Image 1 (spheres, helix red, strand yellow):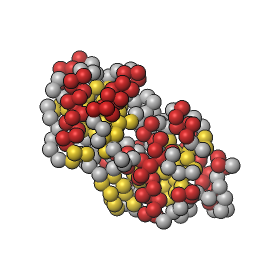
Image 2 (cartoon, one colour):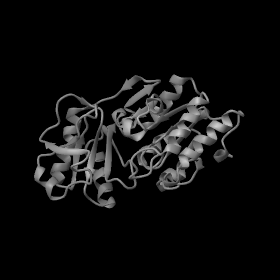
Image 3 (cartoon, one colour):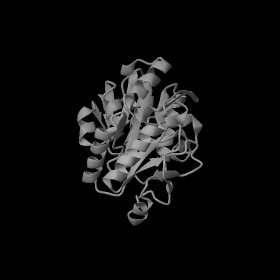
Image 4 (cartoon, one colour):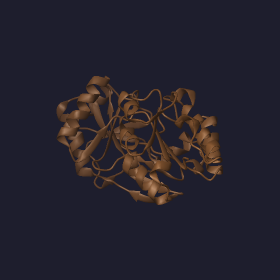
Length: 283
């Protein structure tokens, strides 16, 4: 049986463009928790974003991995935080500026009280071809990365998917101390994280902290930044809208995010656990 369900949010639990998890998804999470099971998001988002994404309910995100595993919480307590050094992030900004590509480093406020800012020596290029998030979750520019550590950063792009992959690969070559992955098949974003720690490491840490064997963990994902956690557990699940790489790596497959398929799977987990059985999607 499954005792712990961990899921990506964007394009997995929550369809692209939705205002947050559906009432059905929130109800399914509560069904799991009320049955004595464990649930948590594993997302590139910060904990401060969970309010609007998960209905403002702290129970739904008391346990989870955030910023692609750089922040780990167990039962409401933060047990691990990994920051990205400012000098490495400055190198990312410099590489993008030198390449003169329509992509800019974004640095996020951990509290969620301030919008992200783009770090660039060419601010005029942002106005000429702004990213999709400009004026909403991303506002303003800065010439340099502020000193210190930063938990969340990404690259905001105003180019097609082909050029995004080129930018990702350029950054992987030029700044190997960091990890660069595509968190979505739709959003024009490249996630930036420390190399050597990813969602898979976060999943294993959560399971270990909760004392749950890894074969009693189910993970759900859709895109490149989910691949490490999909490969980290025996019971990995891809939604139908997942990338080909995630679909190939996953053991189990369910419907698309748009159909609340993860919510259905969570309900199956809760119902089957009462009987000590595996959920229907795993049979």
